[in-house]
Length: 307
Image 1: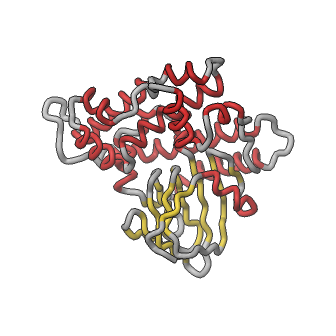
Image 2: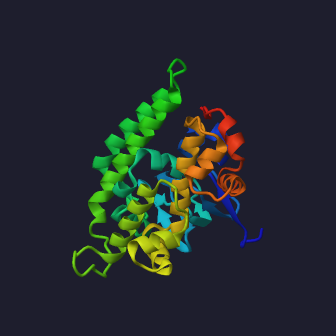
């Protein structure tokens, strides 16, 4: 196999393996106790947020060209755009995974609350050990989620599960937050005492959030922050592991999706609201990021997932 080939995978790609997992829809995937699985030596790029837990045995993998070894009760957190390769497993092993699309996380967590030092800390320290005192709360979440998945009579199952997945994700981020304050960059903002890279990234995310998808270029936000586009791009990538344009497009497409699904406006009116010069450019932008035209996306029924 050509080692230079990188395969991009999304949460929805796990639907092909629904017999091995507990739950998957377009935004969330969860699987417990995956046993003795083996992969060909392929390289993948994640288009979502992935948490891998080692339950038994060991797992060795390369993440962004750095090798990590997971042993029992270790987890590794992979941010979107992470590249994984050279995955190896011990002879007998079990692992657990949870994955969240960026759209899902943007709906449940305010960007400024997760994006500041936490993403930088995860990017630099993706591997951590689960202490004994932290196992009990995690198990309570897992037991409740599995109970809801297996309940055939529950109404609004997808909504209930998404709230539970949101809770466990926020709880994990809260735990990481305790350690993130010590993972600041060395260069300080002279007047405020706040570390420069984290400060610039936080300001960038706040500007993107306030803009609601109206502007979609790095240069616009660089001008707003009085930095060069090159510097903003470098800082955002350094702190979050993602490019500035990915953050901008994720925010814009989430706003566009909401308008297409929940607004009575015409496609042209929505395109005008988002500052597209013409309907053709709007259609190409939506198709590039959603895979279908604005009209087709508007007509797609809500995905009920697989469980």
